[in-house]
Length: 361
Image (cartoon, rainbow, N blue to C red; front, side, top):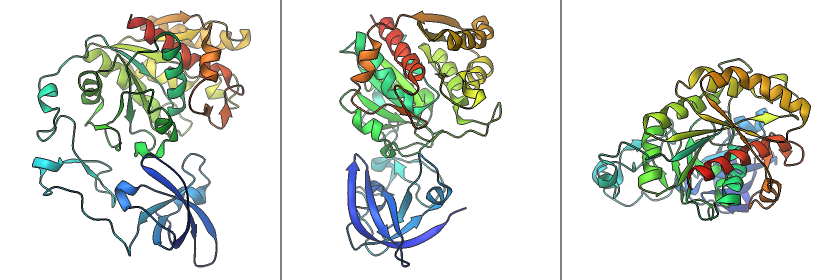
């Protein structure tokens, strides 16, 4: 449930596209780090009273460890432009029936300038679609693509398994020059384009953004319960199915780790085993980087063997990918581990990007 607090903004700290970080003082003089989305609540200034949701902060969640600004009750933002009818503002309601539900213009709605392009769109014409379990794979996949295809047009499709606002991600902000755009689908919002589901999002990436390659991953902060089925990354398998339905080529960025202390994520993560082995009913090309440490390689090969009955295992040379990863425009980190601390994870993602780039040539 919601843990409420009321406080006063004492400082505006760093900001990035769609988000601003604040210092907030509570009545008992406690100082909190808070995050506001100006598109939802307006732009906070020092001295503003703010209503906060502090649940994730109190729980000590790493990714979501902010107090979140729910409202500036004494200085509400103006209504957005337009009449408020679906004719000019759209009617895609995201984060539906929550107090901060935003109403967005869907990329394929009647009021959208892209309606005519998407009205009869039914195919992504062979576009490679890289599927990843975690948001942290995104910059490494981009690095792998750029290593071999510097001019490729890359789109990011953000699903709703993690953060809902794309604005939360400093990674997406830092990759703006590398991406032709971001499409937010399902309950996720705040991308350059809004789509109803993965299918319409992929069509928008191909036909509106003109993407050569689309990367699909949830936003930051995935959910997992430690059980076979209780994790938000099952959407990876659903993306494989959607890609096949629309005539694309699914490329699996494998979640490989020799550093994760949890047994279920060592070698090939159990998330991938379930998503590709049970959820994905269509074939994908699962990318295995060549040159993993022998013990880790043995673990991964054993986990991949049953998946090879449906999917094609593609072994990719990793020459040059180290330099590409180290030149990434944003920091590389997963579960608090950087590039050198979980090297195999990022190398596998970059290898998937390299294979996707090869499919466009």
